[in-house]
Image 1 (cartoon, helix red, strand yellow):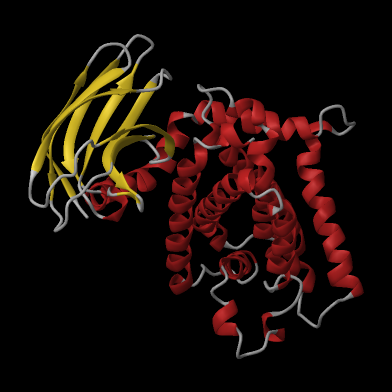
Image 2 (image 1 turned 30 degrees about the horizontal axis):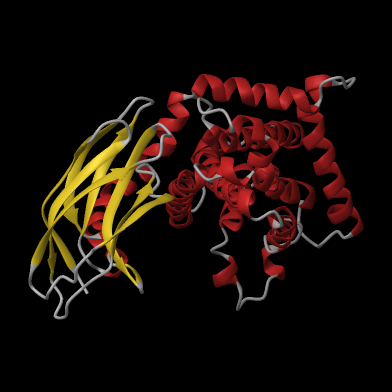
Length: 397
C-alpha cells in the first residue's frame, strides 16, 4: 500500500501547533483506511525522539482516488530543531518505512512557538541517499574541525589529565617519564631476562616494539569508561564531549614520546650516535595517533551502552599484545599465519619503529601507506560512530 500527499502544506497554526493540509491519494489497488500520524527525529543524528498523535481517516480512500486532509498537529514544547515525518499507518505499521511517500518537514521550536523551514513530499530511501554525501563529508572533516576548534581546551585538559594522575606524589610530573621507564623495565625483566629468546640485541629489539604499544594500549584501555567517568560533562550542553577521547589519545601519545626519548638516549649511549632515519618518526607517529583516536572514539561511545565492554576490552588488549611480535621474534610465528598477522596495524607499527631506531632505514613504503589509510579510516569511522550515538548519552547514563 502506498499513499501520496499532493499539494502538501505545513504551516504555523499558533503556539506549538502546525496545520497540515494536503490531498491524500491512494496509489494502491485496493481501498485504504487507516491512521495519519507523525514522528519526530533529531536532524543532526537521525535519532528517533518521539511519536505524536494519530488521526483516523474517517472514510476509506478508493484506489486511485484522493480526499482532502486538514489536520492541526500539536508538537512537544521542548525547544530545538526537529525533523517531522507525517505518514499513514495501518495494522502493519508506518507506511513510509515500507517505501510509501511521506511529508518530511524541518521544524524549529522555540519557547514561544514553532516555525517551519522546509516541507517536501518524499520517501525514506530518497532522504537516506541525500544524507550520505553530508554524512561522509562530516565524517571526513569532523575530526580535524573538532581538534582545531577546541585545540586550546584539548591542550588544557590533556595537561591537567597528565598532572592530575600524579598530584600529591613525591615525584610529581616526573612520573610522566618514570612510569614508562618502570613499565618497560618490568616487561624487559620478564621477557628479556626470565624468558629471553635468542634474538640478537634483544633489549633494544624488545623496547623498540614496546613504544607504540605503550601509547595505544594506555588510551584504548581508558576508552570504554571515558564518557561514564565524565558524566557531569555529558549533562552540560555547551561542553564538547567528543574531545574526551582526544585527551586520552594525546595523553597516551605523551607517554609513548617520553618512552621514545628514553630509548633514543639509551641507543645514543650504547652505539655512540642516533641513526639519521630517526627523522622518519613523525611518519609513523601521526597515523599511530589517528588510529588510537579512532579506536578510543568507538570504545567511548560503545562503553556507554555496553557496560561489560571494559572487561572485554582488557582481554582484547591482552590478546592483541601477544599476537604482535613485541616480546618474541617474528620468526617464531608460523609461516602460514604471517600473511594474516602481518595485517595487524600494531605489527606494522612495531616493524616501523624497529626499522627506524635499530636498522637505520625508513619503514617499508608498501606497509606505511596502508597504515596511513587504515588509521584515517578508523579516525573518520570512530568520529562518525561517536557523533551518531552522542545525543543518546544523557538519557542512558
